[in-house]
Length: 275
Ligand code: ATR
Image 1 (cartoon, rainbow, N blue to C red):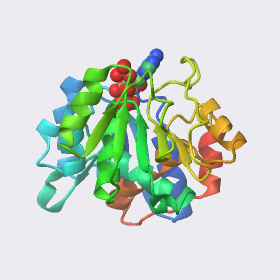
Image 2: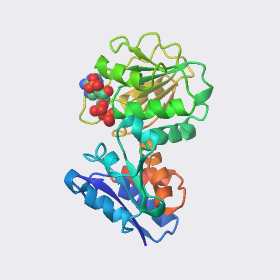
Image 3: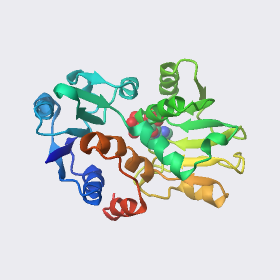
Image 4: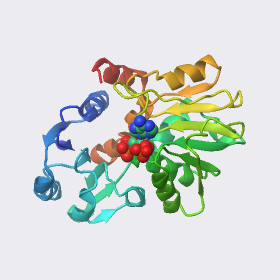
């Protein structure tokens, strides 16, 4: 039986077992997916269990995401640029390979939820400059999207992000984030603002063109104020749950050999489990 796991500390909150468990059942795969509590000092020992064949791979949550790279044999570019890993699997001859699937998950969901997103003649404005923003900018650039701007409360972090993607990302002033939106065709919130328990995101949308798309990576609540406001203006709204589900697709495929579909039932399963 193939076994995979999500590792970290704490892991109790992770939705990964729900997602992978539902796919294992759906595809009739004789496999298992569990949570394993792993602290940083126990990480090398856990990774040896993958090398040895006890597990086919794992997903990685806090606080291990930044620690994994130095313990594996190959880090793919998506994780190298972030300095953060969320998926590890055993390749040929027990070699461990690590990547981050967050950016791919975001674009995978966007492709399904707003298939025309590449056709807009405006640019992309990313709110936030943390790990999620980096992953999304990296994935957007890989798909050939151009004209990307980032805005962040802490300017130094926005500058750091822009420097990572030398010359391809502009930095916009945070205070003036709602101005000059006429040339933005895709607006993405990657900050934690608007999440349950966090301050609201204040983002005026009146400057956006009528065919603009607004995406949020926050999924608790599922319909954030930003998305509700976008819908009220007749704009296309893309929620954050899809990214969570789609980021699991490449891992499941590596672990169990089947590329799974994200479907509404899966959304219901994860939503039903609460946040
Ligand atoms: P992640 O890895 O999930 O992206 P992160 O690195 O902690 O998480 O990034 C959180 C993002 O939310 C950052 O862009 C952060 O802005 P700062 O870099 O200025 O901290 C943004 N954020 C969080 N709380 C915020 C607030 N109250 N106002 C504005 N931005 C906020």
